Image (tube, rainbow, N blue to C red; front, side, top):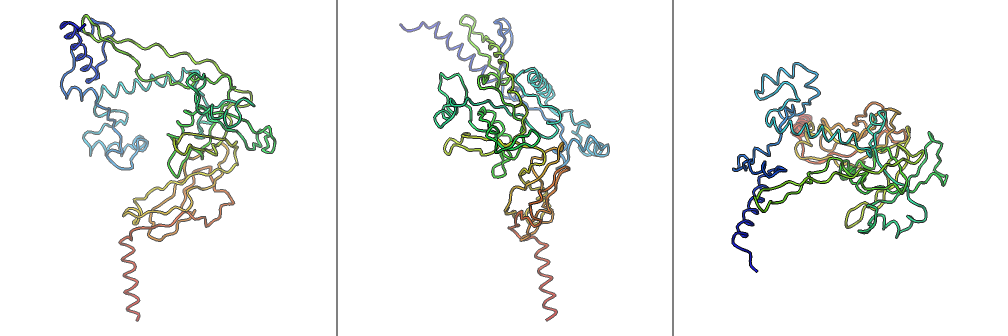
Length: 412
């Protein structure tokens, strides 16, 4: 039986209202009366105004290399900015345009931070660890005999639809730690663990820089929980995206908002005794050759005085006459083995000064800028090669060769 013309017209009106509300990003009210009284947004300009991103007064947008810290410390810089840029606000926290959007963004960030603090599943590190640039990481014990072997580990990585667990990456914790009287030759020093896949992927997305990947060169505070306390609710974010659903009232054709149910409370969990905030360095990261997912990840214990390989980062490339004209530094060693003092921040990278580099220059370790509390391991030789400069000749090099040739001709 075909629907009546009145029903077809009502359905068409409801679909048009829903499409228009989605197109203009309208958040309907939870009541029919409020939705009926509120006018719809029309026009491209009003839609653009709704999505205007906040633009903060950042000093680097006007002068390359300037930072908010420098501006806060120097009154002369603030006066110079105010005199030369009419749109500049003297206080860096003030915004230039998008006042309403900026206030809403700050309110959302504050609410998200408060929600994260209230989340009992968040690992709060002590202050002496956060000052050393150490981030938290979570793992669970593997049950001996049940979660060992190729097939059992494959089930951990790829659980079935009806399995109560989530993707876990198998691995072990090994290595010596003189501060805890742990010796690597002792069989009890090797602990089988399983790490949540999204914990690893979060750090890979944050610190993986291609060849100079920093994930396996960072120190983490690993907290190990019992195997039976592995629950996915402990790893959910407490401020997810808007999960509100909408429906159309068939009588008034109004859009009604249906709020999402509250998130489940994560179950309590207690770390294994003696396995809280273990300082480790990720090692032996194996990725699937096709899907490029994490296949295996081990951890090596870290203690002050243990050498760690830190990646090298080039700085001031624009100050090199060769590099700024299209040349490049052919890196031979992309990492340097360093020792970090106890209590000193562990750097994410060691900076390599490129000022004045010319073609065919050989760069060695004396160009490295070491932070305070960091020193190169004694077994690294003094002539440790970083790389060689290749590429376009600079004008200064051509002039120097021309002067040398002219002096040689005069002597003849």
